Image 1 (cartoon, rainbow, N blue to C red):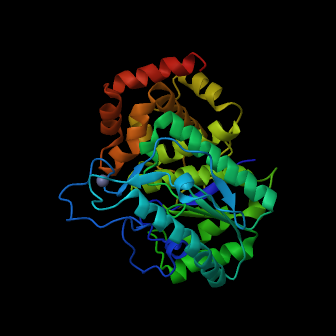
Image 2: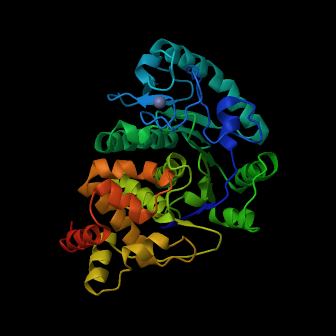
Length: 385
Ligand SMILES: [Zn+2]
């Protein structure tokens, strides 16, 4: 039932999405994919813009759900733009210019997708939500289901965590690619390696990704659909949610979020959207983990028996050879942090991006000393929440 997922932990120079979103992407791509040009900056900012974290975009507060498949009519930009130009740093930019840029993007996206399909020699159904785009070799029904799930998750998170949390997410910045079988998956991996020049500290990354059937970077995830088929695999909807959430954390923290947070958030999103967690990540090395039963009950039981690791030890953990109890603990900690204070939780990706350690980020966001927060988590878990 469980699905493994390979991620490149340290050095991911993969920018497959550059080619998807904006036609010819240069080999050395800027840290933040530019997306739409919405105005010129009057002068280079001395410090990051606090209003928009120098993204040039401020999220708008109210959104209608939005998920659309290739061939369907795109709604007007006033309905689908999830942001407005940042008045503090994107000077001279107007909402009208943003709308016009969005109209242009809608016109240009199809040729950009087709170019990508030609490069891979594969044909996809494309879809967009406000928080990601997808390129799936799957049935229309399955693709639509995944698009709607993503959209629903995005809206639920936005409602709970606030619009600022989604500053960096968009159909141009996060891409999910689902290929039919091994042939397509190999083609995708080869494209990442040969055309995008991907390198990894691990010389075996290619083989590892090949065996896992899913491979993610900070802005693109490649999934092999035939390996996801239940009951052996987790299913495309589960992997779509898990992969998006992981990618979102890596992207919004500029890959500085610790492994526990990315993993915990991905499991949390699976739980929120689908009611169960079936996916997990491996890094660098093969790791087969057996999970049993209800994760919340398992963690509560282990906590009573004094078997769980302390938070500081979990925060240091990597995905290499991680035991099942640690995975479940990470999920439990992330779920607690999400439920106990949404505003504090929403600050975490940014604090990680600014280089805070896990302890520092949590103390700064939640305004309490880490030992106290950990003790409160223990009480919460044992109460069976
Ligand atoms: Zn700004």
